[in-house]
Image (cartoon, rainbow, N blue to C red; front, side, top):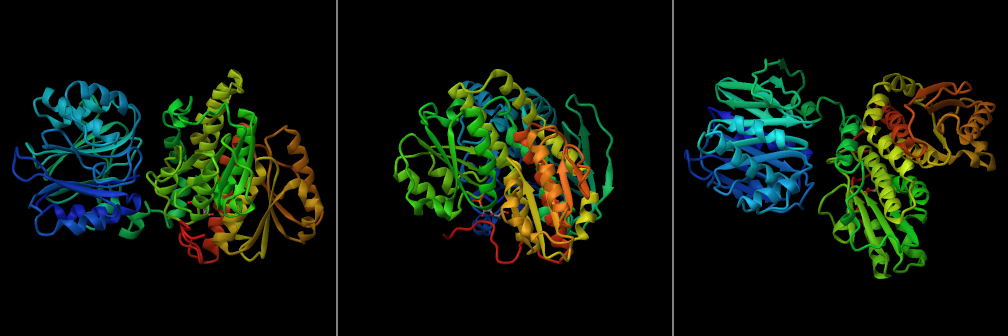
Amino acid sequence: MCGIVGYTGKSDALSPVLEGLRRLEYRGYDSAGIALPTQPGEKLWIEKRSGKLGNLEGVLGDAVPKSHSGIGHTRWATHGGPTDKNAHPHVDNEGKLALIHNGIIENYVELRNELEKRGHVFTSETDTESVVHLLSDARKSHNGDLAAAMRDVCKELRGSFTLLAIHSDDPERIVGARRNSPLVVGVGDGENFLASDVAAFISHTKRALELGQDEVVDITPLSITVTDLNGAVLPHNEYEISWDASAAERGGFPHFMLKEIYEQPKAVADTLIGRTHGLSEEITAGIDLKAITKVVIIACGTAYHAGMVGKYAIERWADVSVDVELASEYRYREPSIDKNTLVIPISQSGETMDTLMALRYAKSHGAKIFSVCNTNGSTIPRESDGVLYTFAGPEIAVASTKAFLTQLVAMYLFALHMGRVRGTLSPELDAQLAQEIAELPGKIEQVLETVEPLRELTRKFKDSTSMLFLGRHVGYPTALEGALKLKELAYMHAEGFAGGELKHGPIALIDEGTPVIAIMPTENSLLNEKMASNVQEVKARGAIVIAIGDADLPSATHNIRIPHTHEFLQPVLAVVPLQVIAYEMAVARGNDVDQPRNLAKSVTVE
Ligand code: AGP
């Protein structure tokens, strides 16, 4: 996600734009930039810096020209590392048109090839820059009508986008557009705002307009025009913002964690863009997947649990042996590694020292490294032979939720890719999985629509001293993840077990009223029957069982239903109720949900 701000009105634009960026910096902080029109027809004044917004503010000084309009951007890098050159705004070759973007342009390469043939000179590695050059040509063909040009450009784009553009020939005007990415209008008195969320302008006005899919908005200090992509003017749906400024930064949610739980459908959808039917061959260029005889996944915490699920998928679909190792343990046992070992570090931050040190150890012993990471340009992908980025957006809450789901999806995508390359995946299964994976965002949405009763049920266990999680097969790492969430958020003892392991000791933990969460394998599977037996065993000893599955379990005390999906994909859906349970328990216990005690978002020490 990126922070997007536009201002046009009676004030000097620098202040409202910078203030807006500060309030949106949580959305992305790899780089920041501003574009201001100075004199009509002259080059725009542009300043942009990698790093946090403070880096940009530190170079602004008194040299910033006065301007009554401007656009600003804080970036969370997707295509192209977090550098000055890749920072937004991007400009056309005349320097008079500036554009900022949030989202992913799926067809940017083909657009760039065509635009370079037309003589446009590119200066960045971003997908966004293709749009500003396309817009420049479209504007010329519409005799300078920026809104008409924007409408044409949007018809050529595939992917998700929030776009803002400004041209020095018409300095008071800012034109925006959106598809699958947020854009709201702030309605002021003699001034108007555009932003990726209301937090950017809430201190100036609480009057806002939501924009719909594929709509173009054209603002000046005294006018707001909204059209569809064919130019038909659409009615304004103005509303009053009911939040205060701090709540607005969380999109109206009480905590970032809950916001990020609800962002999971989009995080998975963004991670799947252009990939559902296969990863491009070059993503593993330099790695001979057919020669690989062993895969080793290394990770920590939640990322480790994603790796455990990945093991099932890679072993079954790519027919290769997979070990999953705690990164902090891996190198100290001096494992056997050779040139046919593929090591897969999984890391949201890309900076976890345990994982980085394990990567370096494996690399020094000849392994190929293919990482899964959510942070473009971070250390782990930089030291890898290949990387599969997830597009969860910045994850602010320390407890990982949306990043975890995108790590699971990345594992599935990689497993399918490796299976295709090695010829171990039947076309029928390939097609079935591709379809089931594509349906995940919608199914996550369905789960989120049913979690309210679970929040109330969870509060009944507020004073419990322990909670156990049972799962089998891919449900076992799901159980471990549910237990980790509860530990780190509710500071409650919690433990995940393989269902079959219970009878070998842990069942002694069951007491009258012990809450047990049972992650049920998909209906009619053999493992479902075995988990049902495990539930009977704990119920017989007084446990209260909450069963999560695609069918009700008659013996459970409570049932949480999730949609059916392929058995390997079920963790993506089953973990969402577990996240909600942990969240609700933390709130009920008055804990700091977004920054739990003793924890850090990225552990950069061993
Ligand atoms: C997850 O809720 C935790 N915050 C933690 O376990 C985290 O997953 C782990 O530290 C790994 O972080 P990384 O994905 O950034 O490498």
